[in-house]
Amino acid sequence: MSIVSKPVVSRIASAFVRWTVVLVSLLLLIASEAGAQTTDAIGVRAQGMAGAFTAVADDATATYWNPAGLAGGALANGLLEYANPDRDFNETVRGFAAAYPALGIAYYRLPVSQIRVTTSTAGTPAGRQDEGVLSLYGVTVGQSFGEHLVVGTTVKLLRAADTSADFDVGVMATFGPARIGATLRDVTEPSFGTGADAFTLQRHARAGFALTSGKRGAIGQATLSVDADLMKTETFRGEERNIAVGGEAWMPQQTLGVRGGFSKNTVGEGHTLLSGGASLALRHGTYVDVYASRGDTVRHGWGLSLRVTF
Image (cartoon, rainbow, N blue to C red):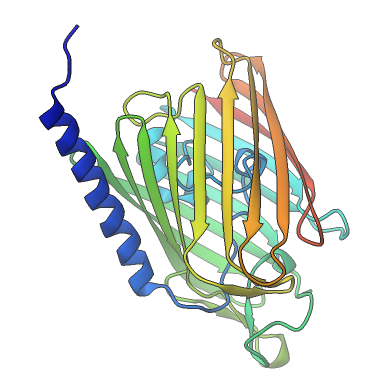
């Protein structure tokens, strides 16, 4: 068995630090403290990890969470999902996504009240937004640069009161068991509606770090991840800037997976969201995913999905 020399380990560590600094610095340069669309409203696995998914993003929901994550997933996978992210209100998230390593498609129906928005009448939403639903149609492509870096883009067609085009950008860097990901969402800041009903989806940046037992960047049987918003935002729940910690573990034959995590708002009233979930294999490569979450005056709900991988 060969032993990796200390100079090689040192070079890998140095390269990882450089990529971390570059990726986070780029997002900080373009981020601003403004209203933005939340990144944790989609994905049953992501919800089960309390939103610590930006550096994981290895299933078809990478089209939403981090477009660069498609390269680290299965050869092909698809899913259908349904969720009620807030049990106090009869609002649901519904969606479909399918992906290959370099191409993904997605459709999601999101309640506007679950989206961080800036209204036309005030910089800070005074209460709950009830302007209906936002339909999202996305196509994702990715490109590898060497063995360690992938850049991906999701081009989106968004429809609410009006129809707008927009795009998200994601990056993923992999060094052995370590992955770092970052996503910039709603780059063009699309606006919808007119007058008092108008709202804008502002840019939003998020970064994540994960350690996994998987090889070649793939998520393995044990994963620990951390996510952090890179700006403060205004929502109907108040001011937010979240940090999330999550984990996922699978049985050796991939027949059962469990996950959990918590998300903490580091500004405002500092609410905490607790979340957990599981995956059960119906047959090889076919899973039912479920999650449930609970928080004090913040979003708390449940969801399930049918996921197929090849």
